[in-house]
Amino acid sequence: MRSNELICFNLEKKNWYLPVDNTSTKSLNFMNGRQRHSTNTYGTNKIIIFGGFDGKSMLNDVYIIDISLLEENVIKHKVSKSYVKNFQNKLFNQKHFSDITIKVEDKEIYAHKAILAAQCEKFWAMFTSLMSEEENKELVIKNYRYEIVLKLLEYFYCGQIDIDD
Image (cartoon, rainbow, N blue to C red; front, side):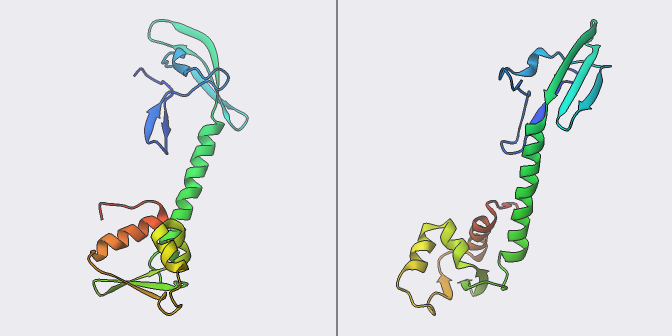
């Protein structure tokens, strides 16, 4: 990689890539790496790159790069993380508003039937069956460790888990 090349990071795919010219869908690799160039913003979502030095000669070119999609993806990612934190901190394994208690290894996990049913067909079938409302308030799970069931439920609530815990 040469100095001052424009490289972007995709937050969803977690990889680096060269940006694409939106008008032709060609990669911007035709823009040589450069140093001592002028860069400025134009409007709220464009970067202008003018001139510079490519290691051999002075450059006298101009590139306008639309970064609106980059900003949109960053905003979506931040909003998504905010939702995940809300579910994790306010709902996941919290007694408030829970309508079912899951018992594993004599430990309790507080949950919400609507979230479990939306994320898992087995829970949907269980909660929509002819079980009485009393039978639907507590669920005992055997043959699984507490930590495993807790991680599964965390995934149901947050769409992600930290397996290093």
